[in-house]
Length: 323
Image 1 (cartoon, one colour):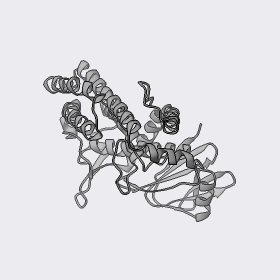
Image 2 (cartoon, helix red, strand yellow):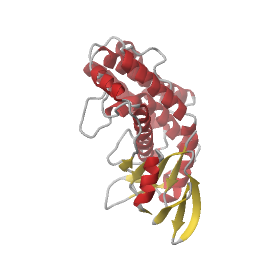
Image 3 (tube, one colour):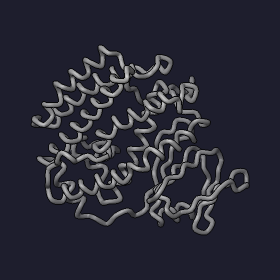
Image 4 (cartoon, one colour):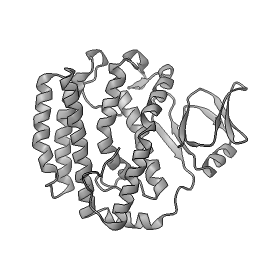
């Protein structure tokens, strides 16, 4: 099993030393990272490295994800040759509209709604939610979910998902203390610590899905539920939908158990938004990797199942989503 390394230190330099990467700061070696069994490196901010390092990482099939220093927004990605499965992509293009696309989309949305409902039920039972909003949200889910498998178009499905999402976030927001100022999903930029952590985690998991799609031969740009849009990894967005409630719940646990608090975030008056402080990012990366470690195998199994459906035109079953 591979792993991920985060390099988040200003002006750090990466050098090749045999079968390892060495990290230097101000000319002093501060650590080494074996290339095997490394899967990905996340570089945050200003990191120095020679092109020979990038060549080696590409040759080893090691992903490099570039995040901006303060905002931890996605900047770019280095990927070596990851597959040679042209037949898979041709079949994916052919199946991207029609019965399989609608069937997969129904399953993804239904799983997302089921998990959102479970999150709210757990928090309500723990008396962490506003009771009135929790009851209203459950009523919305009970009305919406039976309609999901009967919809005849993606447009109808998106409408149902949107109605459920609005009720879900109104209730979910009440699980956090008022001091965090979380009133619902807000991005570009995130306006409070909860949204900041949701955005960061969504970003990292999104690129986990992109990598899994590319590695097995699927095109992450060609989705089934999300419409094609320039620059958007629509298939990764599809796979993210049932994953989001799991992320929401995990983010809630971080704040609830005070692994992160409002003091770990800052706002920039010159550039609006709220972001995780550098001093807290190392803690975040550690708990994120622990949380993700057991889920990557499930993600690989999920995209492998999707490849078989794409190749053989099979519809999604009840166990379609395993992550």
